[in-house]
Length: 353
Ligand code: PEP
Ligand code: MN
Image 1 (spheres, helix red, strand yellow):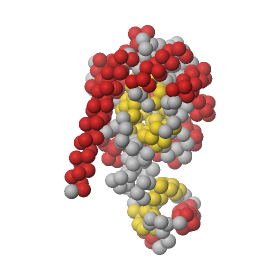
Image 2 (cartoon, helix red, strand yellow):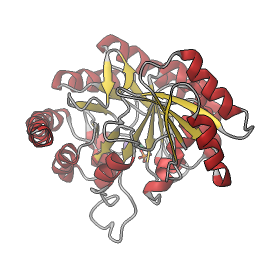
Image 3 (tube, helix red, strand yellow):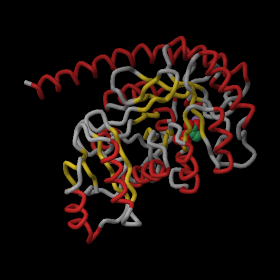
């Protein structure tokens, strides 16, 4: 259920509506102060009580309208055409405004201070906005490099600070949430953990921006419901990252790129989106064109793994661009991003004419 609040309603009246919702004992109000409207999203099963609640709440000061939300995901749902979440990820970077080209880049794994600094300086010089690097690595086989853990987190924090770049890194376990949150600006939930609800609960409580990667076997609805779980716990700042799904043929690509997911999620959810072409295709030569397609699809952030020496990377070398390749791709991405903005302007002209 959603309760639309009239413009100019005072805080006391807004709180009275929330109190009335809480009185039910099992429904929770979430105030959503959007750019154009304030809405209360009500979480919990309304079922046979809708008409009663509609008339009780509808009679209260400040309530403009009461409606059902017809989806299972309620906090991440898009409720009107300009319902879009803008997320401040730190150091002046805002995700979701659809104005700038925002690129998160860096190595799959942080391997040493020197490696991270070389890559970070390179991607920054080419125009990347956010620095990524894994300190806790989910590895399929035992005995492989699992990351530098807290030492890696310190390197990420320090080098992000030196270059004034917000940082993004994966938190794999519930036990490491506080540790990772101390060092990073954006917490990444990996694809393998998308439905690890204990982890989602703890990460949500931190309230920091979260990148929620789609599990390769998850439907759009499951992905959005995982986002709702984070938001219900307190994080309103979730970015949905498409990183490839399980398809029928993985002989030439690591995963199957789901090109529809960005437009689908943009139409169903208010949350910003991220396009991870590196994990999606998994092959360096295929990445540039797939990355460019992410911009035309409308993803808010482009995600790329970059390494100064891909053949010797400890993880994901086959899908890491070298610094020269990344620089060339950044130039192409700027061109495509400008073209996308021109296309959007045409749509806007049509809508207002
Ligand atoms: C990563 O970003 O390095 C990573 C492990 O991603 P995913 O969870 O999408 O496999
Ligand atoms: Mn990786």
